[in-house]
Length: 211
Length: 332
Figure 1 (cartoon, helix red, strand yellow):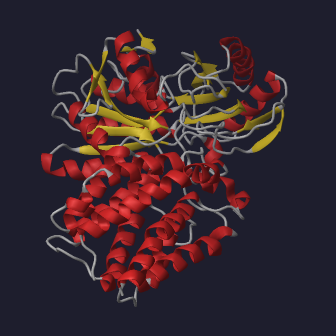
Figure 2: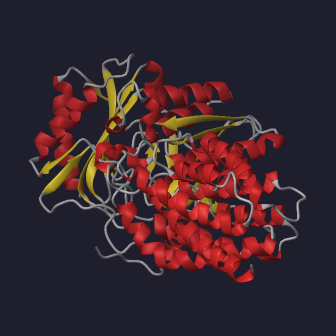
Figure 3: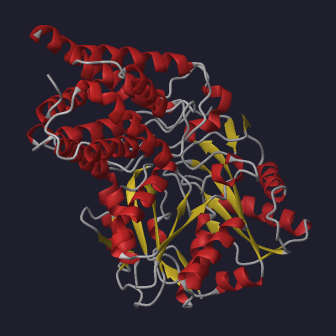
């Protein structure tokens, strides 16, 4: 079973449900390194994406495009803009395709990552959401179905969060904290791990039930 | 921290409604009403200047839309960059046929959205240039301008570039002037108490009741040191000393000074600081031209102040003195 528009719509719906409970946790993580609004910003952005009608899109490209446009209207924050840009890249890459195979995800995300690096100006290793996406690119390289992809994604996003926790932030507002950021999670990486967990957790269960 | 607000979700839009009702020279535009432009735009043939940024810093950014300053401003949510749609609209509405300078502070979200807006407008044939405000010396060394944030000193770049555009200069020249003004401006802030985002339960950072932070950013970004409160003169002395240790290459003998309040610091305290700043600068052999004291760039109810020094040559001095008119700054 591959990825189609209704599956993308269901996934963003799960993310929107999860972000409500994550909002204050992410705000608190951000308060240590920024101004404490990452959770509220993401709740607004993911909520808008969930209302964008992605499930009813004509194909995957259209579904990703709806998510991108909803996100872009909801915020101009750096993290939110990077996420919207990622969906725009996915939309462009999947033009005309009704479905995407699980085995394509890594290659698609690699191009998304290149775009995020070019747009945001951060490098790999700066302790940002880019390092989470990079971990996903590597982990998803050899998957062939949804259950494998879900497990690989959850493990790798969580693993990236842990690996970077004790390194200093080198990008965005958090870079001004220098070594004081050691031991603190980057709010974008934390959000990525938690949202992947929410989206992929159900995906694993779904795969288990149907196979 | 109490606030006179309604639903936090309506904070920006209600404040923008109030802004345009109180100051009829400004009007909301764009599909979501997130562009502030001049009610009576400049006649065609003038280089346009579009700015933008997160909300919560009034009079910056939207309050400097006016004659001899900036033409349009895209408005984000509180402390979030403006979205790409509002940036596209701000650039389009600023265009008078001779191109548009995008002039705004050096923050990630603002940069990404103005860059994307420029790419999306390429097909429309609007020539665009970019100059970023990078005046905050606490956020990077003199050799790291890309790391430096844009803070209160951005209004000097508005003033100089706005005057150049009004005089009929072309896009390259207006861009050169904006970059020159940014390069001639240095700012440092001091924070006494945090602000709270309307949607947040707690203040945006913790600062002890008896503590201050030197070098703090306008979103509470960490500064150079945090220590016990000390007398105003000692703070003023350190701010001047740090700014004069970071002189632009072409600094001469004349400066303008902006003694800016961050929102909740009273005019009296700004004036106490200013009198000492003036004495110190005169002691260093500098002459002060057209000083500004007041709330020009704020962070809602943040307590504290920033000091900006704008190093002048004959060209910048003339541009600073040229007529300009917006709700919060009038010259001539």
